[in-house]
Amino acid sequence: MGNLADLLREEVKRYSPGKKLPSSRALVERHRVSPVTVSRALARLAAEGLVVTRPGAGAFRARPGTDPGAAADTSWQEVALSAAAAPEAVPRAVDASGVLVTLAAPPPGVIEFNGGYLHPSLQPEQAMAAALARAGRRPGAWNRPPADGLPELRDWFARGIGPGFTAAEVLVTAGGQSALTTALRALAPPGAPVLVESPTYPGMLAIARAAGLRPVPVPADPAHGVRPDLLAAAFRATGARVFVAQPLFQNPTGAVLTPEHRAQVLRIARAAGAFVIEDDFARRLVHADAGPLPATLAADDPDGVVVHVCSLTKVTSPSLRVGALAARGPVLERLRAIHVVDTFFVSRPLQEAALELVGAPAWSRHLRSVAAELKARRDAMTAAVRLRLPELALPHIPAGGHHLWVRLPDGTDETALVSAALRAGVAVAPGRPYFSAEPPAGHLRLSFAGVAGRAEITEGVRRLRTSCDEVLGRGAH
Image (cartoon, rainbow, N blue to C red; front, top):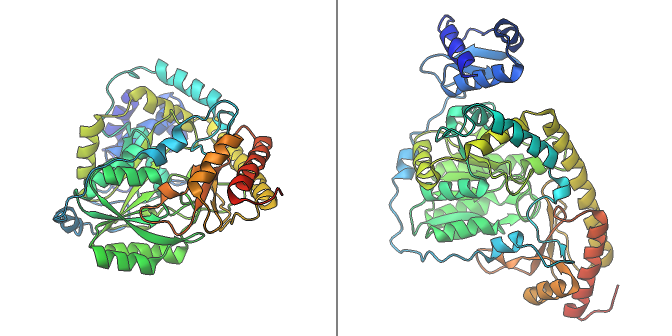
């Protein structure tokens, strides 16, 4: 593949800027190589800025000194990246309990409603094994990879983020958690405030506190995401330069930011001279009935406001820790520096395996299978909760993600209910760790992705009914 890239690199020089290169089929026939080899060679040239690939149109020689994406102005980042730290330091205490509750395996016989990953029966184990085997046989698979990641994998992530992104704007990371850690360390100095959705992902709150940051909650609508009016007020009140958001199938509410609110969030952050960290963790956990998905926030942002985080882990396996961090402008250099210092690089065999996996025909079949099964499981859990646990409120039924977010009756002892549920044989995630300040009510997060199937969902809700009867003091339903 390297030889083909070298040949094409010389061939491109004979084309005028903007001229279309021969089609992939023509290159396959001319050089007697596979379509995958041609695709990877073109991705490498795209990462080097020599060509521009346009889905459905082909590859073109890049115009020198021009950005193939929308015209952008990232000069504002110089102010944001140089902002002084808050005078009062914040202790770097780390509470990992909210993360560990989704990572710890429950005792034998306990139904796992607290999981954060797909059950092994939903994971593409055969496809991953085949991809890993092919990757391990590839020449150079065990050599040191580029610090930014394999060009072909960066190009694949860039195409998924949006048409304006290029491989040169993407870093391959060891999963989404690593990418979030790098982004928060890069964008906010110790002691600074960072705006977060309320409720939000406990792992992100743990990252912020470990970095000495002050998470400031911004209330969100259970169905439509963060409230722009409160976001603007929070920027004014705190002087924060970072807002962390999950615009698509937010964890834990499942909310999707509306088109109107998306535009407002970008305008508000830009006016505040602030960054938006977009945690796009659930795009590949869409349910079969979701309909067309909105584009990423990053795709609608030419000015470098958005730092984008995504990962392959959630839709594959907790052990396939491969993700991406994407940004435009000077901030990319800071992200790259911290990424290199923290990790050097992501394992090359793992990157090669990820590339093999997403390029295989089995990949699209896996995504369709997961979408159908997650919908069926969501419907089964929703029906069971409404039938057996009518006192638990379901503010929003999501069309993506792997869980339901339920509100407990006022006055319920959340901790006692979680303990009673475990005694009854079902592990659930408490709601308290999802709030950076005092929660407005008790909640539970109930995952339907980490169990063996729909029968286990029904049995788990039956056991939860038993624990609710114990804690709430009500008769059986």
